[in-house]
Image 1 (cartoon, rainbow, N blue to C red):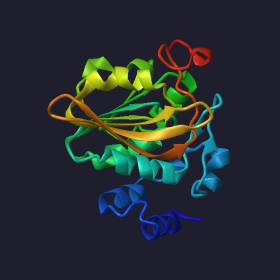
Image 2: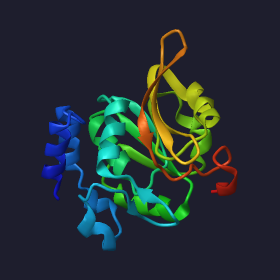
Image 3: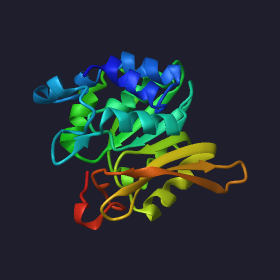
Length: 217
């Protein structure tokens, strides 16, 4: 399967039909964000292994999260969990020309991999640090995306870093699975939430992640 088949599947099943998002997936090559041995499987619609027990999400999951986030040009976005850098690259394309993506990764090997993969994306900055606490240095953000299974209280703790009118998308943990949520911060400061089905992600690491996965950058 190639990217064209995936895009056709998304359109036919009304998963994604936003032409800006479609263009981003055509421009950003998933194979450029995979270890050498995984490159032949770039457009198999499944998660693939990276390093240290981590994965790159299946293309359809990346597409769904991107759609839910509603990224627009010139926005400032925080991604928690860089992985290989693929999601950040998609978002970097979508916020051009003046927008910027900050992506934070706690695992050193993945941070270095993502940084190398994203070196030609001038509007994406890769940070080595603990994303479970967000990244206050550049807050507030127009959009925040969390790419690992997250305790609800951790997600709620990041709400203050979201701008009024902003959106946060995250898989909230329910034990053996996660539910995908979109949280919208209204102009009143209240949070409106929507649920979008069940998913499976690796656990969020860090101080406010899952205890058995705690580590320090």
